Amino acid sequence: MAKKKVNRSKFVPQHNQINNHWVATPSLEVGNRTVEPGETIKITQVWGTRFRFVRHVYNPKTETEWIDCIELHKGQPAQTRSFRPERVKVLPKKRRAKRKKTEMKQS
Image 1 (spheres, rainbow, N blue to C red):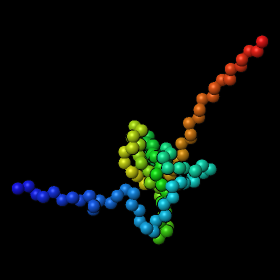
Image 2 (image 1 turned 90 degrees about the horizontal axis):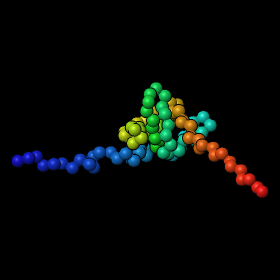
Image 3 (image 1 turned 45 degrees about the horizontal axis):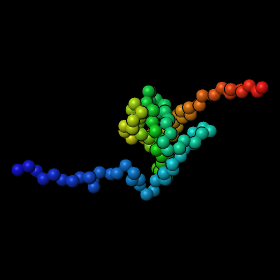
Image 4 (image 1 turned 135 degrees about the vertical axis):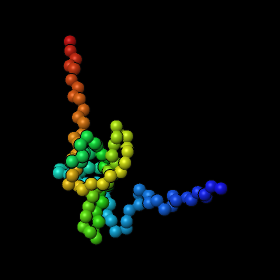
């Protein structure tokens, strides 16, 4: 007979769970810009990879802070990673192409 399959899903910690003493904020100040959840950022010393910002977390007991990000592989979410906030490089927002104004001739 085969072994009985054990449901271990209740033992796996969920991604959204966070310790009670941690302070999670949805945005982060980088230089003169504010990074909001869902914005694409780059991390120093990680070449060729972009990340989507999730949240900024601060642990007052150990006085450490980090950011949670989702690694983007070919534009699709891949794995969750955490970095120190000092390593964040904000990508410039895409500029819209300027439209040429067409003047109408008046008779």
